[in-house]
Each structure stands twice: as C-alpha cells, then as structure tokens.
Image (cartoon, rainbow, N blue to C red; front, side, top):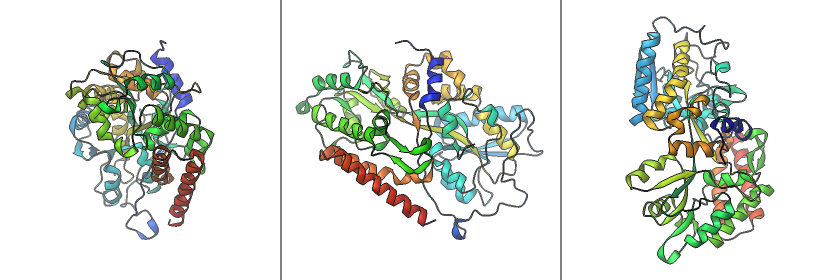
Length: 440
C-alpha cells in the first residue's frame, strides 16, 4: 500500500516513545559529587532564546569531537562551513562517539574536553546525572515537527532537551532478492515461506535473527504490548517485560524454533547468520545499516523491508539509536558551542551527512528529499523507523540486558515456561536496580 513520507512522519508521533541504556561510571570526587568547574565557566544553560539572538563570545574557538572515517570528513566540512559563517575557528579531533562520554568524565572537569561532542543517545542519562552537558539552547527550534519525534525524545532527559540530533539508526528485515519472490506482509506469511526454504542438511534457512539478543527481540515484545519501563520508559518501578504481551512474544519465539529455526541459541550467532546470508543460504535476515557495506562487497542482490506485521495486526516496535551532538558543561564558550551544535544538526548539514556517509537524517523535511526517497536502502530503514522506540536512557536500563538475554536463551533452548521464565528475569532486574540504587 502506498504511503507518503509525510504521512509516515505523522505516524512517528504516535509510535515513537523514549527508551535507552546507560552505563554507570564513578567520578574522582568523594560520594560521586560532580567536580567544581573552572572559575568563570558556565555550567547551566541560558534561557532559551531565538538563534538569531545568540552570538558567539568574542575570541571564541572550539574543539569538536566526532568519530573518524567518512563521518570524520563530514565533521571537518561542518567545522569549515561554521567558521565561514560565524568567524569562529573549530578544531576537529577524532574521538569515537561511543568513547566520547567516558572520555568527557575526566577531560571535561580538567578543561581538556571538546566544547561539542557526538554521542549515542543511550549515554544521556549518565551525562546529565554527572553534570557534564548543557541543555539545548534552542528547544523551540527542535520541535517534533522540525525533527523526527524519536530524535527529540531520545535526546531529552527528565523532560529537558539536551541533544542536537543528527541521525537515526535502527534495524529492519534484509532479504535476498534472488531467493525471496513474494515478500511477506505478516509474520505468519514469513514463517510459512521460511518453512519451504529451510533445509538443515544443506545448511539453508529461510529466516534468522539473534533470538537471545534483547535489542532485536524487543521488536516482538513491544509489538505485542510489552514494555521495558512504565510512563514512557521513565519509571523503573514499573517493568512490563513479563506482561501478557511479553509472554506472547516468547511464545512466538518458541514457534519459530519449532517450525523454521531448529538450532540452539549458541549456533545463531551474528557471525554465523551473516556468513549464511552472504553465501546465499539465508533468505530473510534481521540486521541494521552497519551490515550494508559487507553485503555490497559480497556482491549480494539484497533489499530491505519493514518487519512483517504480527498476528495482532500491530507492527514490531524495533529499538532505535539517536546520534546527536552535546555541549560540554565545562566549555568556556557556551554560546559558540551551542551555535556549532545547532549548525551541525541543521537540514543542510544533515543532508550533507547523508550524502557523505549514508547515515539516516532526523530532520523531518529530508524524508521528502529526492536523494533520500530515491535511495532504496535509506527508504527501507526509514519505513521501519516509523515504528521504532528509542532505547531507554535512564541509568536503570543497564540492569535489563543480561537478565533478558538469559531468559530468552532459556525460552528458546529449553522450551521453558515463558511466564515463569520472564517472571524470574524481571525479579532479577528489580534486584539489580535495588543494588544499583543502594550503592549510590
């Protein structure tokens, strides 16, 4: 069924909620207190004002942290264009966006951190609780009409917007075009197709996903009405991973095990299924954009489509990650830094990011841009992204991954009672959160 990109955007507002994982870390001061910033450094954001009213501080110069490779080349381009516009020199330093939050814990208070740095949204909780980032100075410019709602909710914490989002990353269903002739619209259709395509003696399979990886399996849990935390994933005292919807998802996994994927969890590793897909022995494969280059190099004739609809008529709610820039709370130039972060997340710079790296934009109008709409890979992921849920960004999320992975392994390998297994996992999560809270 045809659906315009603009209507997809409207659906984001309904389906995209906030969720995130965060890793804890101790500071070097007693009782985990945040070190005092250098004298004269602004550590609280100014009142939100129009971008036209903000001017960079006299004599400002900035350091920008971003990952290397193609995205690093884009960061250099941003730095050059920003200096041309504002007259503020920007030095790019290669620091992985995954490593930047941890590095900032020591470099920020020491006055060595970047003024603006890139980070995944799931680190936001620890950055805010550590007093390491300033609020977004232009919240009115970052509405969920201008940006995808997932990008705004994913880079907000406790009701405040901190991030300057630049791209979204999620997963979808890859398929081998030479093997898949009739693309399934529902999960039942996909299972029926996979049955005829699976021959364990020839090591050929119709469908694979990492069945004990909560990151991927959450798409089924959420689609059936399960959830991680209550109140839009902000209340760790309300855990929905053993409700009726979550149980239904576990039962679907067991059906898949019986009918189309008769392997142990240990045999369905990422590397194993990737090898099969590249060899032409796997038809349908749940994966993310990070796999695209490998598939192209392998000469695969592949496509990307949304995850099929579940038997309750709902779409699977996949986890998404939001990449964004943040302003270091210890910067000497908060105005200039905020302007740089805003400039880097603008429509023009996001389009350039897409052109240079293929990373999916979060600026809403770009969904209708010809170069994005015409890109089969981008449109496939964006089609699924309308149902995505950003990973929770409250610190308690770190207590969820291990118990859920163990529970999913037990449900799959041992055909265990789903309700009892999930009940035990949720109790483990509650115990871990209680231990985490008592250690503060």
